[in-house]
Image (cartoon, rainbow, N blue to C red):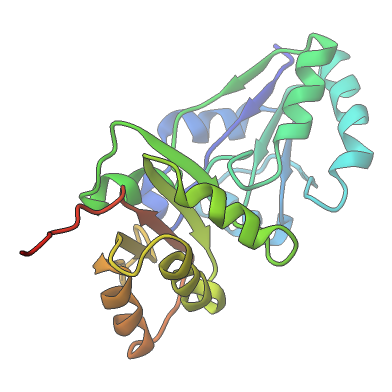
Length: 229
């Protein structure tokens, strides 16, 4: 049956792929991949020989309509990104929206995504949380941080290694240096690490240790201040 299937892929440990994901990737006509070279390694590992074509942030506006028409005409396609669930801080939203607008069926499989294990593992309240993803690099960054600082819930960010200390410092500036945070990196991989503490404590740790791997920052709710008389 022709449709678009959103297929999560492992964020590190290849064992995290689901049997259903492998079945779908083997059965569709075409796999839309964020980076065909990177995804080629994954497909080879699982013996998947389905043809790939590139679908990424630099071409999605140009090719989305054509892809939707091809699915409508009978082709079954799967969308994957380099790691995790498509459309979560990765390409995918525009294509799903176009499919919905054109009445093309979309199915999303459950599977790997980085923020869920980081949030659960943080030890911070997870009953209500706000997923921010990546902050703006320049324009609007401070305005966004000021807004987020006033939210009453746990907040989840994605960050790259070379911006981690800058982002933590700004969280300390706009939120509080005493705010509880948890930083997870290299999730599901051999050197997985989660560092918890106040902003000050976590900044001190990463000032003295090598920062590698993709990173999830979880910021806790407003800390309770102890008042001494």
